[in-house]
Length: 395
Image 1 (tube, one colour):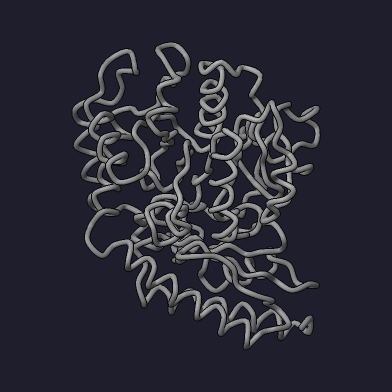
Image 2: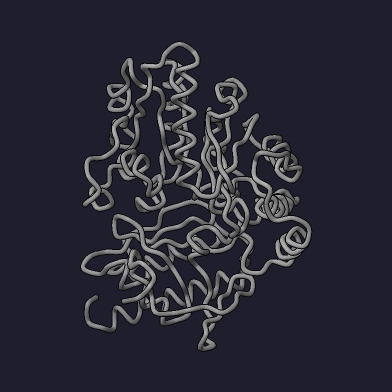
């Protein structure tokens, strides 16, 4: 038996190093990383600024725990909140932890304001918020819940982009509305900007909190620092992780001052959260994200890649139905009888790594540093992949 617990259907490739947008396998094969570690390796592999920041910090101090002041953490929190809607941040290690913290914070806010009965959240079908028991309950995906008992209580799920259904689900026990601006695992399914604006207005009308899951969409992925900026609204609480530190484990719960004030010493915690190593890399990542023109380049390159993918659907309509997404978070809707796995396997044979999602969608989540030459590599690999599927006689 393999000593690693078999929770993943792993692809039989191992990588020994990475260079920018590329990964090199142990047998010397070179792949363009169109999966980006599932939207994590935002600055590419072995980015010199991130490597330098981590190396310098590792030579000084790794860990002290949150029993003490961590200057790197305070500096990052100040810089991050200055760049977004939030006034305060709590640091953890992963997206699931960030969502757990966001759910706890929403409940605690109402409790300290005399409405302890408000603990439920309205969530959206097709969501993915993590693999903990609470976050599985929030998404209620039967495949992910199978074998783990009844889903955690406290969540009422409704169809996305349906305001009437959402309003009908809000009751006296509702504490929050939880949504991803662009559903990742669910199939790169965007929420309409008008719907997002209505979520904000509805939360205000009913006195509930708007909690956004920007774990996958945040830190430049869609061409804005955070995806909710496209709709011109702000949340009360936001969970983020993935690209926050360019691949070093880190997550955060961000909140406005009035909501964050509900937490006091002992109400929540994390042993590793916000440790000096993570904060060093997070600060270095933020340096790059905030450089003049960086996010504009992500938007520009995302549009270029998106246009190329649309052209691909026109050449292979029997294989690709449509293109979804924003910035460098894009998805190809694969037409049956073909599957996203089939197309992803063919793309890998032509040197491109991708990742599957719901609704038979193949995701592209490349590093945000890609430019025109990498776009050409992605499109050429996908063209070859589609041609190979077509020549099989299945198209």
